[in-house]
Image (cartoon, rainbow, N blue to C red; front, side, top):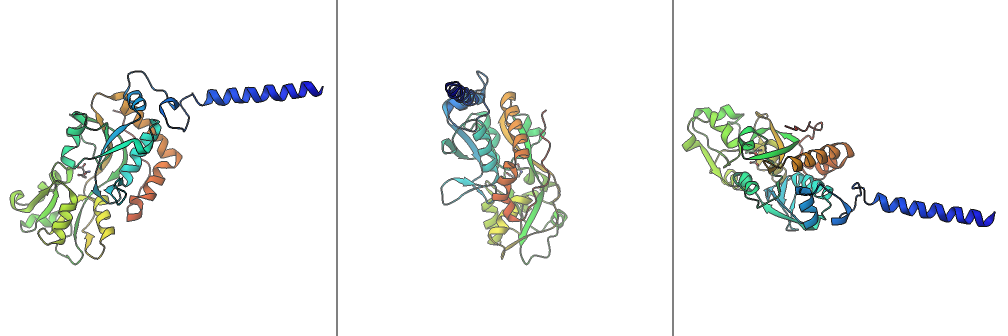
Length: 293
Ligand code: GLU
């Protein structure tokens, strides 16, 4: 009787061990490492997982979304969303190579393979979809205007119609295109740089009267310098943020969409926000519906 019970316990323990070992191989393991996940042969996911390395394009100058900090690595909501995707690929965080991707070069670095994906306050639109594909959206921002704290002359985009005020934005961005509909003279009123921090400096120095881009980017600059800047008016566009990948890579796009949906539901998307841009006064809102076009 005693021997039988011992044998039964041993058998149960063996079975449990066996089940644990199998559980590690089913692709749902939280662990990282090439062996801990399996992906379809020939897929981008398999290639990246096997390489245990990934290159990600993001911004380096946007507080709350992608800003290079003292650590030397970018920090922000886009960076955290990208890390969620990297974890799902079974790649350790320290194997990410972060590549600065200013607005104008985003499609190029995806098409020419400089990066594997772009997470960079990247508005999904049809023009960009001619060259690349988007997973997401994972957030919806809106274009707004930042002015000096004591400015009372600019109250919204219509304030540029008088032809006198200068507004700064970034080459290759959607806000730079949209604001052209509001200024009287593009040549004298619209000042373009390659990054938003240069626009912020130009506003602070008085070379321009306003900076226009997405509200959440501007809120990041305001949070860092509340004595100098404020928003002028309400959002006047919708800017749904997507993850940029190669146009033909539908499997990778589907994988990222699945990962985003999981993150919307398991709390990691909200945590990413609360730890970053959420500190700067913008609302996260309800999780968007991913667009599986
Ligand atoms: N979301 C806009 C865009 O993709 C503006 C922000 C940016 O330039 O990154 O063009």
